Image (cartoon, rainbow, N blue to C red; front, side, top):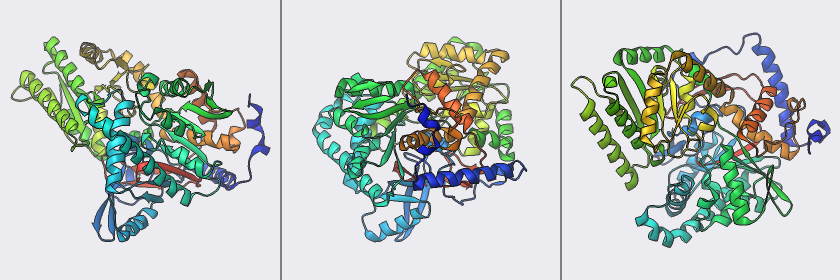
Length: 595
């Protein structure tokens, strides 16, 4: 057992990373003493939502977070995209990182590339320039048409199987080429002692590319989607190559224990290598595999409820839906989100409970995504048809049971909506985590509404004890859960909410990032002073409850004071964020440039 070495200060390496960590600890101690005098305050409510100042931490968003738009030959507008991970990573405010990614646009000319590189450099972002053919084969092809459906248990459409098989090799070649292009940019900017954190299925080949360049480079890889059963992963023609490439990482992370278990099972069954309690071992080399459940910046949502604009919108919503229970769904308009299943379950509930016809309303926010893809266009038409049918059957001249919006809401409007909701419906068919459930809980400490949560969402392993878990494919079960939630006694609502609220407010995005990065630092032999009062071994591949306990122990021992103010939401294009921290050398690689 490696227990005693974690308490040995002589193990701390004399590297640039260690030096910066020691300096940050001293500054943190200084800030903690000043905060006790009330100097940090709560200035969040004083920040205007339209203020467009951007700090060094604005770049901390992952896949599909921000894109660049050309305003001229040498001028670029950096715009934030919608995405659940944005909400989570807004809370990551203790690491200064250099973010490397694709800007979401084709920039073929040298002048444009120099201008965009300069604009991104101010945000500590570094672009990877991919041409249109690479993007088509890599992103639209291999990532979105092969890996994404496979990881979400969707498979490939029958009519596309032959075409997909024929083009598979060219798409996989483009995937490897794009990953090598990312690696080339990392290698250009890498300095000894840096930690490289790669994100998501777009960059599964990247760890191998990086290790071939520098075998001593410390590399972590985190998957933000589910990892499927080994029986599903076996169907992928490039199954062995991708697993081998990911295993080049020093640390592999997933949202839940189940995803980590599936990955280890795939490695043992497909590659024939040995599983250990800490991960996977191949010819004496150990790759740690662990669960790191992501969270949100819950304080940001809680603070927002005190903003006058949010309170005014809450008042308007309460007046608008007076006398009716409010149910809410907030989803991307995507096949995995189960919006049709949700609507059909609500229709069945209305069929079986006529006394609720004029007493309940479902508000469904469906943020459009991939609107140029036929399958998504078909899904949009299907959802609109179901909404129209239900409103035609159960609506009146003055009221309809469903209010459906094909757009996102700004941060303040969404917080107000969360706060007045009685029942939140999350019916994902497959979801890596689903942070809408976390946001709802964070805004419900006053109303204490009920969360109905799909058992196929990663959040079910964290919030399941306080939510009503359902199988979204069983509309009868979901309809019954709606009735249970609407009729639930106040005492039970209070008990369920208290459990989830405590989890959401203690397992934050900040802790998720700290835990992952510090797990890599442990591998590097670098330990913070605050770790010396316990043995913070890597979170092992064990039962979910044990992983949570390990997280609580380490994070509570490493609790510190931070001064941070920000107002933003995935649907907004403006950010304000002020932060004072000491930098930790860290590369984070996401597929779309993060601003």
